[in-house]
View 1 (cartoon, helix red, strand yellow):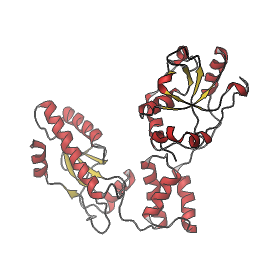
View 2 (view 1 turned 45 degrees about the horizontal axis):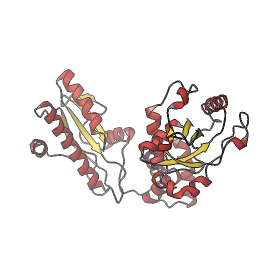
View 3 (view 1 turned 180 degrees about the vertical axis):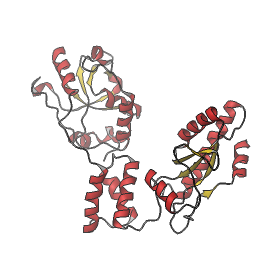
Length: 338
């Protein structure tokens, strides 16, 4: 899979997988040229007099989704946007016809240009093409996680995938490169359980957190912002990178009730480039930075959110009967230090 930043340098390879659009019910095939690589600076993206075919404009969430997809690489048979050539006398000789979301996503990723279908058609034909492009594509049922678990379990039983943690994760990432990492982790966890895969680390989902609390943990703790009657604090759990959202909810609780909150954290998938120790350190650093920033803004440090501990994740190393607790005095020193 070619990375988006390398697409321009690998134009022929990218071009070979681009499908030709079929507008034979609107224009002749000869009115569509083969894909042409055009720099974005040469394209007027002023929406073709507003693009009447789409009244709701650019959707930031869609642009973000496409950014995330492009950032993982360009898939073969990737559809491309289209332009109309209006003349070299213009500073921007081309006008974008459709593909606004994907074009803005590519712009946001710092790409200088991309391949476009160049369509030579009348204004009425262009409007019809724009409208047709907004029609839903033929229905296709996307893979559900259960579907993937079923087929990968079959391959594991056949021995085509080695039954070990690294091999399963690598295969899932290779086969489904655009699937969200959280989904890959959930699928892997189900495969590990079904196949009895020996694993080095445990990864938590909402269901697994509740299971560990019921079966292993020697102390009660709350989740999802519920009030812990034993401590008179609200309890949260979050994965690395989620402390910002947790802090916002904890601050809201504190403002409304005067009660503080605590949070217990766990890491993302452990890799050679992102070890368990590195991720655990990152969680502490994120918490300290957020609390320091809050103190700077409000002029004083208020412990409305306490970083309580880490979930056990390393088999044969961590104690599975409770959290790996933080030293609260040490944390306070770090927050108050310059």
